[in-house]
Image (tube, rainbow, N blue to C red; front, side, top):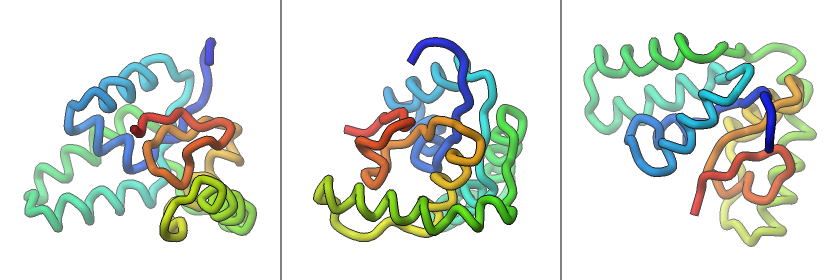
Length: 141
């Protein structure tokens, strides 16, 4: 996908980035190439929740959240995202069935996809509910 573009970063991608994994290195490359980077606000909440469950202290979680804020625009949940949820969830659910993915997509997944559709961006993720969709930068297995 040559040229600059807008990317919407999913929780999966940020987790890999902070792990410093090979997938995280791909995220770093995409962040550098992107003209605009957007992180839905729900992703910040999802990351904080994960890290707190794992025992990370509040200062460390705050540092990660502040880093994300410094390299991306935080897109709040607004009417356009909310009204796009039906379409986004339907796309993810149909895709999951085609891919044979067990379990339904989460609301947060639909928020990420709805956000990307509104901003005409590419979702960067390894979440299997997104695998094979147009305008997804796949970093999964």
